[in-house]
Length: 362
Image (tube, rainbow, N blue to C red):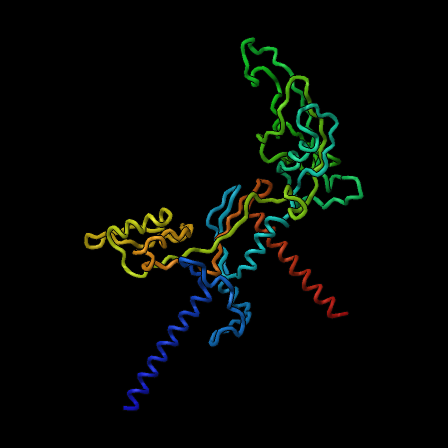
């Protein structure tokens, strides 16, 4: 009968279209980890690419989908989720954190006396990499042609001399007992205020972030007499200005069990993932695997090595859900660094827009 054939054809066509739409959703929103490669890695949700999808830019839609969730925050590190953005924007934040948020670091080293075994240039390099606790937002960038002043320069001094310990026992061979000041640490660096800095920074103690960084080792008679100037700079110019130890992101893992996994297979499946990802629950006396927290997974793909398990699990990552980890060097708290990175990106966008306006006028 014609009508029966027509309706069955229509039903199958609708099913296929639904399946196709489902596949498109997966291609658009998920990165799939396969046995021999990673699929759907490229962003494809640009306007006109998929029939039936309106991918034109919409501010309201973006504001509705975009969010930031702070997962963990302490004085040195931070983990937060940035959801609803493209990888290009997430990567811009990461790169700005690494190279474009300014800090204060030792730039000029005036060595008046160095009789240690460490060469002058090596010593200067070691000093330059010591993180300095000073808020860069309170300082200006220094003009290279002018002398440093209180608004753009911090002055530090390192003056130390090693001598024998008169109270050391004759039988001792321990340098810690035999000598005084034989280990030069960052705590020996002292701040020398310029102009009115003593009053302006009375509440904040300017100096190295950590006081136990080893700079050099001395022996009796050896000494260091050094004056240092700290200036404001960015990591793009030199790594010593980078405010973060690490700044990285990863996509949120998604683990889907395609069929029930029981017994010994469930035990093995649990061992294939990081601790806390898969748990076993008792169902009618059988141990059945279930996904508890896929966020903890490192995406090692260990499960794909087991022939009897690999078709039971689907490994993916959510394309627009970025888990950021920011670890500060201690100069500024990590939440302040992220805020400063946002300001830098905003300034870049504003500069770009003003450049466009100026070209239009020309």
